Length: 212
Image 1 (spheres, rainbow, N blue to C red):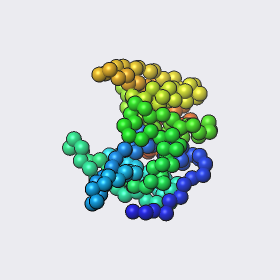
Image 2 (image 1 turned 60 degrees about the vertical axis):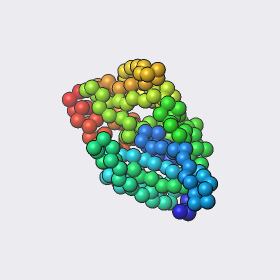
Image 3 (image 1 turned 180 degrees about the horizontal axis):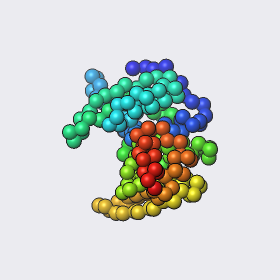
Image 4 (image 1 turned 60 degrees about the horizontal axis):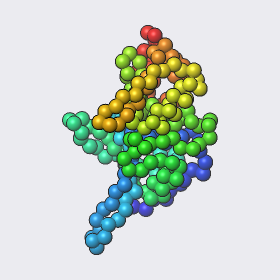
């Protein structure tokens, strides 16, 4: 389907946040399909996954519509006896635009990196990343990534706000994973300085901040 796509001309808070969401639970797969004439056609899918349908409806879809002028559709998938909602769209223009900004297509887990963007928007990338991949770590909050670039970026932002954290790299099957979790006593600093939008994450952080 051909869409009338709008492409942002410059970085802003919403575009940086969307990039962070896609770094966390998004995907730009390298894929092709077989056409009726026997030739293969390159596809330009943009996927975003969540187990919460309301996160798509209240955050991701309005954000995507505001940035690009089109609505992704929601597909329902089953994975390990749970429902996952995949917000997807196919657009060559948006796909190539995101690649140009610095998004890693294909299997991005270990090669994912932060784009080159104005410093004032970096915190919004981290907000999107934590709103997806962030979660409970022991008695506090953090995230795990196989990307050294994302781990270094997260620590850099935490350092810039003097948010205390622990970093625990560990190796499995020859690959290094980086687990980063903040001190529970700095949860309020995280809430104050990182502009999270996922209300579930915010509510959890407030709940542990109240007893810290």
